[in-house]
Image (cartoon, rainbow, N blue to C red; front, side):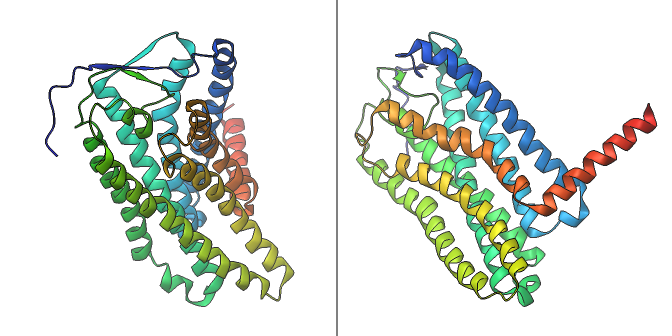
Length: 316
């Protein structure tokens, strides 16, 4: 699409929760704690999996990629949120807003496909255990990971470029905490009907299709688990899948409500709260869910801590 260079807007103003100044002060502390815990939690997952050769299997390598996405997603959104909450008027340049929207879409789209790939991995492991090594071999794993990242890049490139090809003639106040597509689109001084059709169709393909495939996979998984003769085997399978389903429900549920809605479907404040669910809560909870509910991860973490204690005592 041909870029219109007549746009008079050179910067945007992020409003955040400016209508509730007392709330902003409280949220700043909460968001800061969440951000630090999110970075630490996902960093631990990345380090533990990277250093433990026994965890270099598709299930945990998918998790490593997911943690990389979560760290990156948080680093793109949360610092800007903290600035918005700590200042009365937060301005962001046209280019910076473009960049933030691009990476939000990139990491969000990548996560959608990664969660779908993880569901397929669990389906293959539980429903076809004897053929799992063939179904989920190294080649298949690499293709699924590459497809997830490349799809995220393509979605971000097309959608962000299209949005910022529109004319922005004012006002320049984004009633949101970040440069999300739905919030920026409200400032466009042009007919966005064609883009909205494209975005809605894209959201169906990127969000709903993987989500429905995940539900189908776990329906099959549930029946396979119920047929297991061993109680221990059923409990282990339920534990593994429950963690993934918890993450999936939180991420896809809030993403669906945000992007599969009419323009005036929710109030601006409600949209902000929904965006916090997938931009703050999901990156925070994923490392806790996968670590606390997974015995292999807990053993690897304990082993890593013990090794560090031994090394520290030897150095001392």
